[in-house]
Length: 551
Image (cartoon, rainbow, N blue to C red):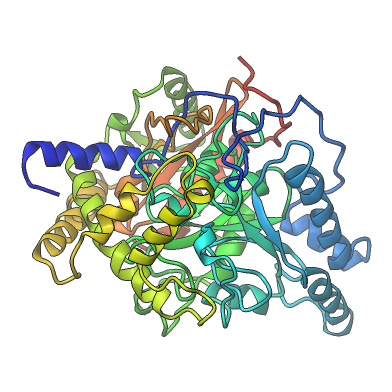
């Protein structure tokens, strides 16, 4: 990327086109779920009201109560979710949010039932089925592929740190969720939620709409009640955007709170996994299990003294009272209907006793995005090459260059709709000692953190900053790719600071979220505010798998 004006415009365009500040909006309609292998699409199915589901909107607390009383077992719970995946994800509306289910899930659940009888529950996640995004390694019979056919047959030798934590907590690893292939860092004309392995994931509120990427499957599945909980990952927007578009709660934690060891990387200076759930309470419970120091991920050493074993203790229905909340007003204005929803949200915060500082704007993101993209291109090549080098002998690809070559030689399967220009640009980058990379890294971190969130929060004495997470889901467009309208994920993503998206209402039947952002390690404060807002508004409602938005 050159330093001239044309190069700068290219960087800003690519930043908008990938997932920087959101990863994508769409614009046409019909062919949305076609298998990559055939290169063809299929029309959206006719409208069909889903059959009643006994476990719809079930929370961790209600499920544990039922299992403790003997009214439900972990095995029966797992069977119910597997049947719902079969009926709604693979058939019926065909959400395509789940790539594969765990062949050992029922056996794991049955063993946990026996353990509960003999010893009691390990904790709040005992027997609870959880879906993992398909960039999270599991040492079992499920593959870890980032949605790419180039990694088909890639089985992790051991659990990732967070998968191990989930097993130790008694969770049932239910399956792997679809995602935007390579975490939506393949093409500047991608359709978010599409992967070579899974095809195009759909939004459960309107089946011709995009679920947003790259944790698209995690967001769609938990919203559609295909699982109790899900785990996604974010580099910039990939937890909070699908959370907003699918009407759920998403937590993008502080960088280092959750280990990335055993995950397929995009960029180590921004990557993190996090909870995607239907309630703030469930997300808080899941975060406490995921968080922890891991010697295999040196970034987690900074979490020592900051991580909490139980984040549910910070939930507070009166948490807005007396809080000073800044309004990132410059992040409004991209959609009038979104602005109206957010004004209602701000009024609700005032009624809850919050003090609003309006405006409390962050620096412009234009320079930040240019530097961020440069960082991601360098780190993607270095981090992915390191990951691929450690795969077993069954996997032929060992470098990013191998991935590019594989895609070129399997174009009908991997490149039927859009290309791989971002992979090619990343491959052209040098090592992480390159001055251009180091300069971009320093600049992006400074603009997002020290001169961005830190400076604004300290200047106004704020507990948090709020902004619209994004707009309503866009129509899937496999011809032109995504069409971005607006969002607010970049500053906390680049800074490595926490960001929680909570449902804020609906536009034409499509959910929209509000983001609560703070400084590093401020998850307790953000959870207090987010839980109070959720308690006051109760905007979450389950999807009904309509063919189109309610216009």
